[in-house]
Image (cartoon, rainbow, N blue to C red; front, side):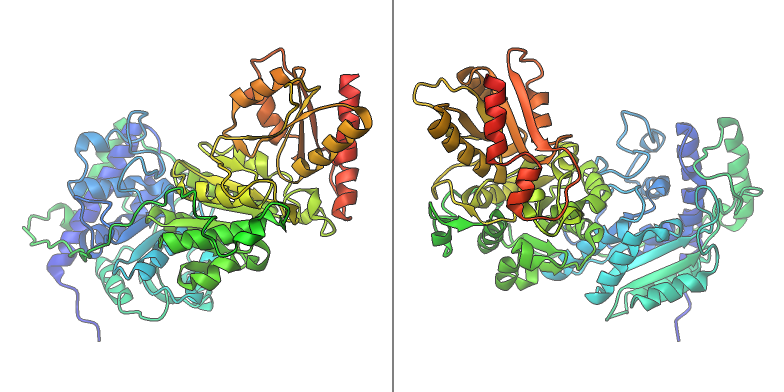
Length: 637
């Protein structure tokens, strides 16, 4: 039988919940925008979290042993700022700077404010991120728990259930969800409204332990959080029945108030109404002996940064596969590089979406099973879990077919907003994958990844460059990095000690007198087609062309492009196994927009492909060696 909750604690928490409600109104009213009614439904839950549950050093938000709290329903972030104001973390002036351009207290959570764990607000992502953080705690044997607050409206997002299923699969008992089931979404009721039993049944079906409570009953909230800590074999979801705008007469549980701040001349009456509604809390005068839950202090080994080691390939047992003249798929080189990185840095994690035998991440898994996460066919959740791991200091690589990252674009976009250094590898890119057909062909991925702020897009043309560029990704911490890894076995072009770097390129062919008729700028499999075209042009037409391997598409080396144009009749021809829009050619054209003397010609996939052999598809798309020869002849004569 549960022990009754201390009445002094209940009174104290009720008082704090009232102050959090008032501060939420003050902040949103001052801003003239925000979601005050969404804050009011969550205020009691947040008060208990911040003043009873969280083991957290509020002087050190980066403390590795702090409990983590993620507000997945990010539009309600003023309730968090209000709680931190009540904790003395932020000043009243800071609270009232909410949503100003010079304030770190933004309209939805971003890590510009150190106490926000992750960028949220695009709904359906917080549980995945929290799962990644919980996995980090288990891996490092840290005692912290991860709490994620969701709104009932976002349960319509499939990514929530991807996370729920995987959390249950791995029995993540250190992950505790809080469902603020306030019934009303933006434009109408949520899908199950206040049928709280349905939410419980769904999470139970996914293997979660559930507590169903009145989300405005402080004693029930305290008891549920305390009991959740005792669940040893599965994750827990606290399902709280709440009311949007709770405490505001005439507004509580009424539609049409979502995302609408109140006016300044309404504020005093609203606060007076809250004080009357919660009169006992408003009259609270007790000096309650509040004790901050202790943070588990763990001595953590200082781990070296993953630094670019030019000898890693040289010392790899698989070195013979990388010899000049050998053939090896870049995707397999990626797998070998991950395994090598895992040997020198224990923070490397690899996440898979049921394609580890195609991306060759299985090479890493065999060596580092405890740092490998099988996410199954759920790419959105995979990226979210990787985000959570990265936010707790891990170096995660997530890999799948490049085409399937498109469904996780929102998670990638939000990770970029959160300044998260995700490392992504997309294999099976372009028409050159062959008979599987267009559903499996990544033909939009360069464009998608280029559009992400601070992103890096790398496209290796052989095994050595793929291996070295994977190392570069491990070192890059400025944002998202993406490696486009060709499916086919390709000849090794570069020696073991060749140097590659983010923002670089390599000159593959140039005439002895530096006077070529054109320069072919390309990467990946079309570089090999360009090399075939080079031989045909030289032997059959006595025409010399230069070839530049633009393995770093973003950022790219403008100086090298300009220099090659000057050595090559001011003519650059880009060739790529990607759609014309947004790819390598567009990147080159954008970079050279101010160089009017340079002539640019583009060769790319311009129509939706079909099944066929790789050779026939490269020909069909007009990007094979024969097509390159014809293009060169057509533009120089």
